[in-house]
Image (tube, rainbow, N blue to C red; front, side, top):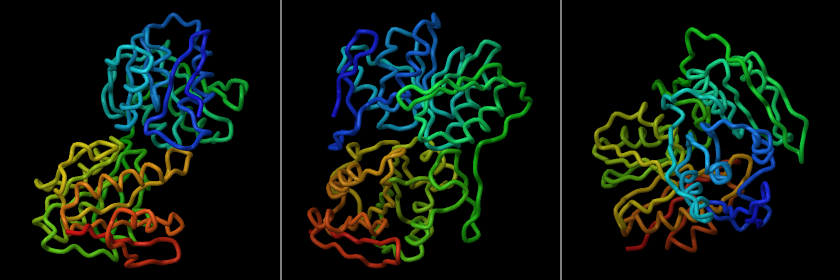
Length: 365
């Protein structure tokens, strides 16, 4: 795995967080380098960064006045790690995609896999844009979608594309359009007679994914399970179901994605509910939960990677009480049972269909 990047005759040490054993993966892409090359001669001091996933822009542009719009807790950790590795100050100005920004002169976006999140970024920028605002979007050509242009043209009159360089291209946006009223970028949908809401960019837009549906239709909560952790909680549908099954339960929701946590707050009003935006469980006490429920992700943008989930299973074992349960739903081909059997004394597939398994794990007393 390459960790040394030379840009403009300066060498940077950049590592991925979380770490990965996949040697082909780096902490930067050619799309991000193409963006940097495009703005290299600019005298703009104030720059807003979007989807700087591992901190390559924060590191190379460290002498500028930067505002970083963050989406993942692990992203903040990655940025801090790489600033420290290069001996740069690690005091970063952070905003979320739901925060109001001050005037944006130049914005850099690595276009995310979620087109909804891309639109959320563009709307956030547009609200504080001026005649001179420029948005430089980088992407790898294999991921190009005509929807990039369709979304951008809602907010900007000028949408230009660059020539390709090392399988990367730019989408350059100028001349913000006049918009009198902004559409609220929230999806609403109904499932089993109940309404749910979630911000643009949160997994399974406009419905409850079929894995979670299978889980909820076949999962039973025991009344003595009073302290419950919903890991990778998404829009909070599983936590809400737990509350409905056991009104005395105190549910803690943990998700790496800040918009998922904010969406779950829209769907849960129980006073016994705690919300934690984090990629790990290090702030949760040992032996503190009766039950952990989860529909864990195995996608990392365009990558399929179960390393992060497997490391979380170790955290789950630590925070479970003796005799506590982990119950999760997963795609059958991921073969989680084999990995879980190395940690838990009892691992059973309690329900399955052609695509999904519900796995129950018991921590021995």
